[in-house]
Length: 350
Image 1 (cartoon, rainbow, N blue to C red):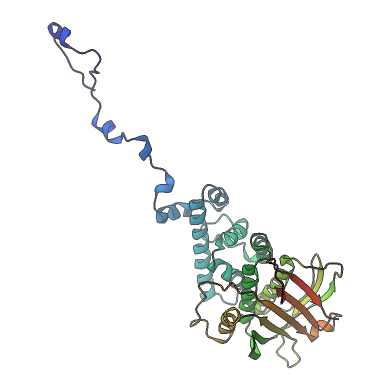
Image 2: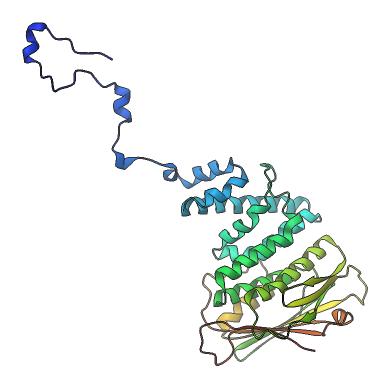
């Protein structure tokens, strides 16, 4: 640092209020107004996503709780890494349990992620990730059922009894059924403000062994139980695994199984869908089932028209174990109901 030197004779001419020291040039360049201070969130999203990729997965929950922008970027990174692991294992190891579990998780969450609920997907899969940069999804297949339970619980809490829950539920149900190799449409017809479709699966079977008769109205989470069972059956078909077990639920007891035999007596399960509503409601569902997936275009906006779904599940194999031959499910608003609240009820035929 340099100083100004003055002669003693000129001391009277010097203004003592002015500093004599010079500010270094480097310090002058770094000085900026306080209002223009930069922070981490001012970086581009691509840079932030790259930085997040170097962190451990158990830190992601803290990052997601910091701000909405960091939360969305973290969710984008997790979703991208999952899709990358899915593509890698689906091409190389299609018959392995690991690949089948990732595909089942993708199918159960596809509709929700496409329509803006990737945060629910990331919040459900984060606790299952391991601290491994090369393969953080290594421990996910072992907890596929727990992931589905956590995910659908968050969906029920977020959406509740709404029109959007009904539409995404029906879409996911059809998406899972179409993923079966034995998927077959036996009939499809269109009527006045309705569409009926009968789907048959060869190998899986399920039925209600017991149901509580005290409840008058079921909750949204009661319907997601069927999605969990269908996901389990799909995983068994992908891995060619035969099983049968009893599933205990809060209000019902299901018996479910899968038969790997190729005989003519192999169990079959039929799903009879009837959607009551306008053509704008059921036409996307029909197009998805009957058209090629590559040509199908997802609807940009869901119609707001009210609708009702009647679903009848028939399984003769389940009847051998004491279950009724038919399981009847009604979802959506009943005709003439003016209330904005969506009604749910499940009825078992004996």
